[in-house]
Structures are given as structure tokens and as C-alpha cells.
Image 1 (tube, rainbow, N blue to C red):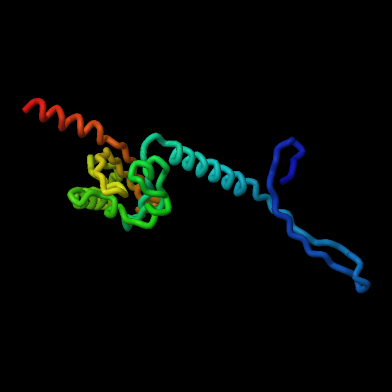
Image 2 (image 1 turned 30 degrees about the vertical axis):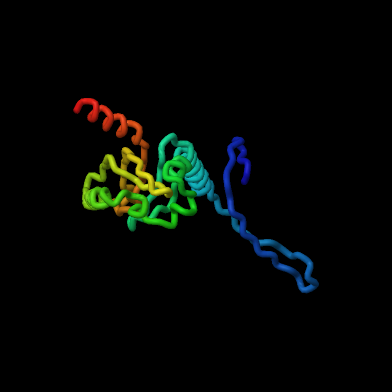
Length: 179
């Protein structure tokens, strides 16, 4: 890091080569200095952006997961782990099918296929059932978004999961009362 005359900070990379005399005493140094300020500032901004995403992901009040295009969990937040009763290490070793209720697997696969073939890349919202580690059923409002690179190539899915089990049970009770 260097300080410029105007007080601003810049970043440089120095390369030097030492030439010695026959008696091994330093004779001269030849070197170059390259200004890498733009690259370094871009790296710092990227780090800040990644940290912001990490904070939003981990601090979210709803379950969140990053899902590979193959359906494998690659990252899950604490809320999602608690919701399903698994540790993060356990969830990242399984496919979303392993925690989806069998009756909702085809619906989930259809949603993923629709997102992959869609040109608009909009998010999809679906009510579906999950199976906890204890094999209990929970209902969730799940939003799935496909993230792409700058060329539009699919990278991975962001999944947001809100537990609506209480609401679904209340709806069932209301239906029973109405009958």
C-alpha cells in the first residue's frame, strides 16, 4: 500500500532484481512498480459483497439453502437446519429429494425443470412438505430462484423456506369445524 501526494491510498506490486559486484557487494537494483489499485479495490468490494451475502444468509429469519443444479445442498443456514433437525454437515451430504416428502418430489422436480428452461428466470413459489430427520412432516412455503452468470448460464438455486406447519394445521381444523 502506498500513500500518494494527494493523501489517497493506492496499491502497487514491486518486483526487484539485485545485481552484485564480483565481491558479492550490492551494485544496483533494477525493478518495476505496477499500480494495482483498481484490481485491489475490486477485490475489496467483492469481499464486502460476499460478507454481506453471508450475513444475510446466516442472519435470515427463514430457512435458506444453496442448491447445486444436481439438487445437492451446498450451503444451508441455521434456521433451515433447525427446521429439519439436521446439522449443516448432514444436509450438505444429501440431495433435496432426501428431505422432500415423497408426495411432493415430482412437483419439486417440475419446478426446477421449469426454472431451468425459463428465459425469464423468475422465482417460483410452492407450498410443499418436508421430512425432518425424525421423519415428521412439516409444511413450508418455498421460494426457489435460479442464479445465473453474466452470460445467463445457470449456476445454482437459492431456496428460501418458511415453515407454515401451524397455518396448515389451523386450516385443517377450520375445515373440520366447517364440516
